[in-house]
Image 1 (tube, rainbow, N blue to C red):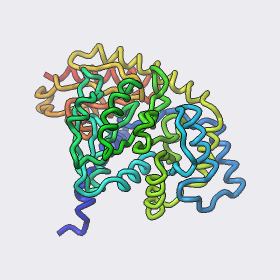
Image 2: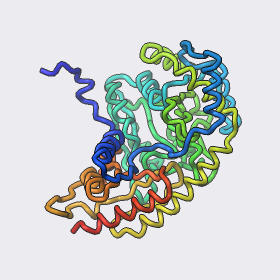
Image 3: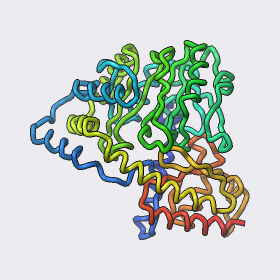
Length: 397
């Protein structure tokens, strides 16, 4: 009999972390591995943000912080939501957490009871369904395809809602597909939620600023459902602050108070130094953010052209984030050196071993037809990585 709980035994390991680990292990043996498995900007944190952190340490701001975050940081979040998104919140509606991942966990654990249903469009970020497991909820998936740019329709949403539905979780811009919902598309979904007042909405907007089309649109803009929306956001992607571990929820006071209570029993307040850096980021303007977005867009265009030239890959042009999610089913059943590719996870392993390029199989994203490639890497690395992928795939027959 295992000493471990069913809770942990039923939990899956993060596929993105697993593939990154495998890539590092291979690199440690002297292999030249190009990792496209992690969703991490390859830029450094901007200097003015690092300087604010240094000043905070020099001022001995090294003590426990309020569970929900420093008042001036929460006020900076409120100001950002108002000026950039046209959304009205109060500082008491904001809970700052140790990364957007904790913010998501807080919200799901505070909202979902055992047996309640959580609707998740596929493909989805790997941790969504696992957090639902921790809450003992039931994940209900709405499948999308590359032909529909991986976005659900109001009709699909309406068909998935039942009296047991408690929460709908999605991201826009989306990880892993890069899809971005327009205002009209979000309004179509919001009208369905308006008719179903028992359903709450978790809107993961962490890739907000990596958007190559129009300005970012939040589903919280529709007043008739705003009190049921929990916005998830943070600093990691826009400001290249992944290692700082800081994110937040913006929600109704009832949900915010619950998240504060939950977090108070798990991690308490986020790192004091990180919070000072967060204030500087939000008060320092978007110049560095826009520079990074310009670089990401250039990389996207380069990689899209190269991937489109690979026979057997079905790829669309993503409107945001820094991922491609090509369909790879044409390679299933093919073999090389006695090994047959049966699914996208096996194809990712094949690419790591044969091409020395780390990607992530689509199964853990809820779509076993595809693999995820991150283009958050230098242009020369990306060009070489796709060359290797093309060469390796050509060996399959």
